[in-house]
Length: 64
Image (tube, rainbow, N blue to C red; front, side):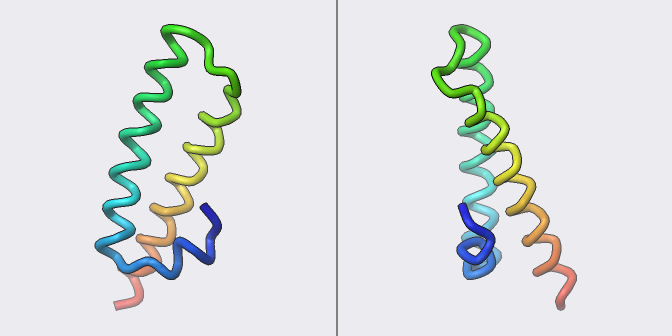
């Protein structure tokens, strides 16, 4: 997910996206532990997307 797309989201939508992304990330790690993923770089991308969303959420919370 691109930064511009994340910034356009409201706080509530951003929190929902973070929760969903975290759940998918955990599932991805579990699946990778059982049998290796076809593209293990997806794990790295998911982790960075979550961090990017959390950073923007913090910025939005600090603006008020």
